Image (cartoon, rainbow, N blue to C red; front, side, top):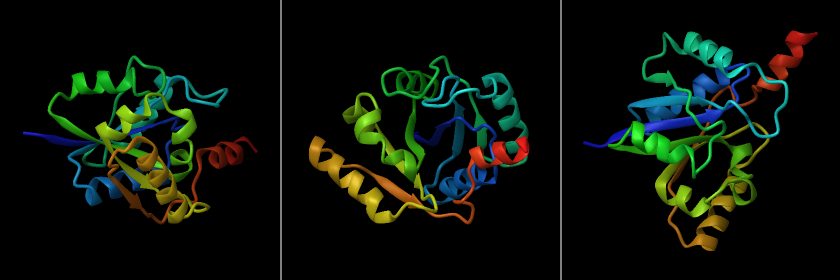
Amino acid sequence: MTHHIGLYPGTFDPIHKGHTTFAQTTQKDCYLETVVFLPEANPRDKRNVTTIAKRAQYIKHKIAHLPGLTVSTLTSTQFSTRSTLPELQELFPDASFTLLLGSDVVRTLPYRWDDLPTLLSTVSFAVGMRVNDTEEEVVGVFNQLKEKYAIDITYSLIHTDHSHLASSHIRSSSAS
C-alpha cells in the first residue's frame, strides 16, 4: 500500500500560522496522510538562525494539536535531491512524496536545486502561493522545466489566508 506523504523543508525560524495553514490545507487538498516538517540545519542564504534542536522542538510544540503534521530532523543539513531524497525513501519505503514549497522557492528551482530531473520525476509539488507571486509565474517555471527536461510535472497551487506571513517579519518585530 502506498502512503502519500508531504515533505515540507525549510528554516521555520520561527514556524508560524502561515506554515501550519499551508501544511494543513495541502494535506487536505492533496489527500496526504501526513505532512513532515523538515527543518534544515544549514538553510540556504540564512545566517544566525536558531539551532536546529530548538527549531525542531518549537515546531513539535506548535503542531502537537494538529493531526497529521509531524517533524523530523535528517542527517542532511539542507534539503537536496542527492542526499535527502534517498534518506526519506529509506524512512518511508512505500511512500509517494509531495514536496511543499512556497511560490518564491519555486522560482529558484531552475538554478538552485541539484539533480533537478530526478526531483521533478520523483515528487509532486504543492506550491503555497505567496502574496506577491502570481499563478502565471509559477506555471511558467514548471512549463519551462517540463520543456527543458521532457518530464511531466505534477503540481497543485495552494492558496491560504496567511500567505502574507513571513518568519523574517516575525523575527524583526520581536527584536524591536
